[in-house]
Length: 161
Image 1: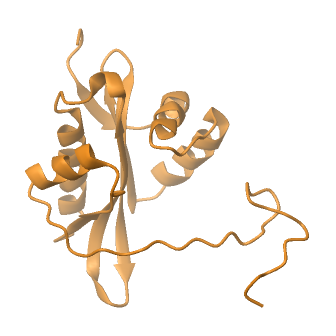
Image 2: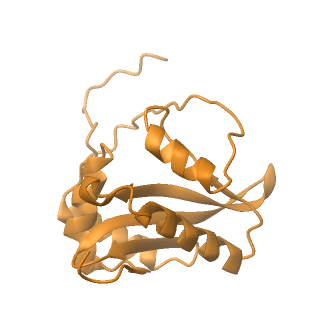
């Protein structure tokens, strides 16, 4: 690392780097897609998007506040990724610490993260920071057939009636 690590709020000029890193997570996106997402999220006070910047962006984290009927408000880490070339250098932990500070500043008493069971390094990172598994669940998706979405098909029948 030539430059000291700087954790800072993301801006739309980071779109290409964030898109590339999202692909590392298995969520490919174009820079144009990411620009739209960044602009929307950074305009909202209930979302925080931060980048780990060295000579370039090498990681990002997205955190948001969640309000629901069944529980008090809490924060949730929505995504975290560090470039493979910069993993195991403490960058992920610093991004998580930023998300935790963001949550505390908004009065959240709890922060949650969901991680895919195949992401062993992510699980270890969170456990080292004191996170504990609270439950196991399945995630169900259903694409709604909205024109312009990746999964849109004009004549897709609904198999559930």
